[in-house]
Length: 495
Image 1 (cartoon, rainbow, N blue to C red):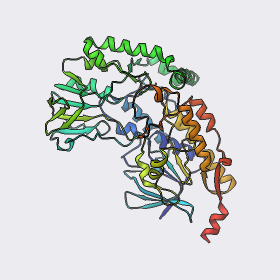
Image 2: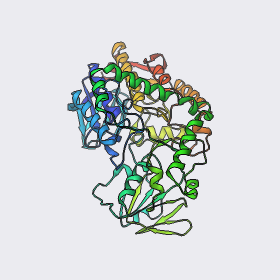
Image 3: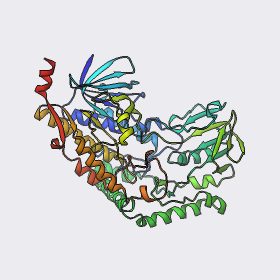
Image 4: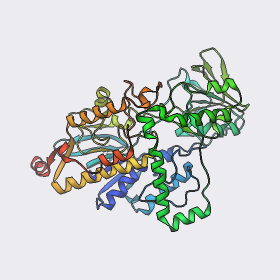
């Protein structure tokens, strides 16, 4: 049985960041496992037509690895994927990655004070710390529709795109109108014979202020790094100006609302279709999307927006509740991911034999500082509960959490701790305060049902404040809020 000091699950932005920073700290005895065939995480899996980021490129990247060569203000998937691959390769850490391997079962060994992790390749690894970077957008969520498994044509989720399927001239149905769907639909409209868009709830969509960087700009960014840092800083603070509208007074989002309404009016000429795609909830309650091509695509002659609920799927058609049957050749499911019930939680067993999923079923998904969980010693989550954002770059949050984990590991080394976990009352107090702050946010008051909310109506996904506040709160590890086991107790237990 192999032992490592640190086992990292996932090789997306979170896993790559953790690996680079562990290596910088001299924590070289680590292993990163990834179920896919390479680094990239979300950006490797989501390679559907039109996939792109809705956060500006210079902010949606590591602060320690600036890229002067971004081609666009908002990068597309292949460029982001190439960036992650390059950063990982240049950091010289890939020899400690194992691809095509998933964590099937991980349990805390109370006597040995380490994690025992069974891997999908049949091997078992023990680790002093378990760092989960599996993310909230890693496991596709499939709709529960009667008969969907009987459909005879091609069916696939947006995050499992089948590039072998020729969509030219085909009749295609798209279920969903979220962030992925609004990028996919304009691309399908160009090639498909007909596209049916099944909309349960219309999203607010504002213009995508994208542009191509000039050769001169790239030259300046490369040779005057300070200017690139200033550009990133300006983008960052511009994004933070959105926070009060999300968290304190939704009326402050009035300018964004006018942009969204104008986007509809500009993209769609038919008044009936305009009404159909205009949301009835406050802007920001669900994720605000960006696109210049979505509404024109919906207004095209070969696209129909269907708002009647789907009753069933047959071998060759989708049937809505009004009895209308629409024949199709291909079914594209763009219904998002398991975000409020992270799949990795089913595989992690803490002290006492309960899985993380079991613990969260009763309390709701929660952690201390979005990173550590009572009852699960030496477990760190990157992009854990209530660390998501509705306005800015998750890479900023990832770096903040990794900094906290690094300081925790340094503290364990310096003070001789074999195990740490947050006091339960501290974790409860953190989450009660967090949910109190969540109360007036547009996500809770805006009149919508979104994937931000769990089955109990609690927002366990987003951070209800400024990102710089989150970074400050995680700027140092706080051992006073943790139960610790000194290393000598571990040695005595083993003896």
